[in-house]
Length: 117
Image (tube, rainbow, N blue to C red; front, side, top):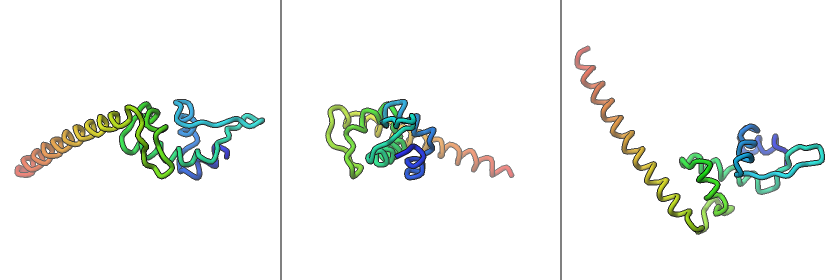
């Protein structure tokens, strides 16, 4: 399928699809006219990439995890992947705790400032 078709099917811009290809997350062959030609698995791959990005993984981490992705979106055991995902989860937990503290601080500042109005 052509890049425009893949973009439409996945709701992803052509520019982003080219980026995924440039960083090694997605592959295509070239037609005689030079156009990219994606195989039948490309739609699933793009959806997996998008899901992993939404989970907070960088493209570098996704490059490690993607070969372990199964058609149903789950992951099969691959060396190092579980440790990578656990580290990412720990990072997200830390960020969540920092955001929660920032919310508490902001709420307190608003409450104090609101008393003077």
